[in-house]
Image (cartoon, rainbow, N blue to C red; front, side, top):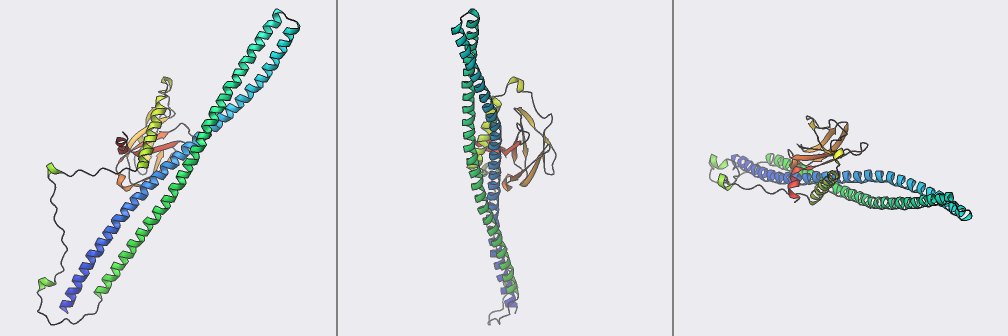
Amino acid sequence: MAVNRGCALVLTSVLGVFGWSGLVLGASSLTVEQNKLARMEQSQENRLVALEDVENEMLAYEYKLQRAEESLSKARANYEESLMAFKVAEREHKTAASSDTERALHKAKHAYAMAERGVDSRKRRVDIVQSTFGDLEARLQDARESVSSGETRLTGQQALVDKLVQAMLVKAEEQKQAAKSTASAPAVEAPAVAKPSLASLEPVEPTMPELAAPSADNEIAAPERDIDPELLEYVRGERDRLEKLLSELDEDEEGRQTFRNLSLRPSGEDSIEFEFLGQNQYRLVAPVSAGRQTYKINSWRFRRTIPSDDDGERYVFVFDARRLSRPRLVMYPEYVLSRLD
């Protein structure tokens, strides 16, 4: 009986070691896929910000196009009136030429030429706005397709994470049941063998080989962080957008800002003040916490996802306040900036 209890104890220990190893490997895979899911959610949020930016631009250009078409319509009406006045002055001068009719003809001709020039310039303006609006429509379509594609990938990744979680639960339950079965197994009469010593019945603890600690002169360099190419392109685009916008800053606009005070308040943390850059752009750099976060900027709230391996990392926050009805919050890891050049 003592032999059977000892064998059962050893078997349980072995099962526990291998079951624990399987769960550790499963948890590691789950962590990798969960972090990948968080990165994908972050990229999807960036796509939604880009989509919103295009929508905002389209709203602005819809208004510009409306104003340009109204201006062109007025210019055409003025052209028709000046053309008729020119023809009348020309006919009167031919009928009874005098210094007065000559001055009237010269004046009417000049007004007609200016009206014609006004139509041409306003027509070019309409063409430019329509062309830009067409480009924005194409960008809007691309942005919508990108968001839709990202949503499909997110759904697939979420399904994978759910599958891994379920597999780990099943594995844990199987391990639990195996341990119960082993503990409750009926005793089998042992064959006649030499009486074992107490030391031989002790469960053997698995040992791991000792790793030599790296010396101060031979430290192992930390692996370089793998950066998603999509995130890299997003950060490059936002950096270039901001630089281009600020390069157009006039001296008169340099000190002009919409907000006297603009602050960011992460969930459960103290407020941080933004720095005004010009052109209604505000910037700050602050550490972030992993998970789904809500960032409050004055009265606006923005929800973002921070991957677990970015916990504690410094992020760049750029608040675009050019359209107060629909302001934008751009945010990305500061470490990406060192990989742009």
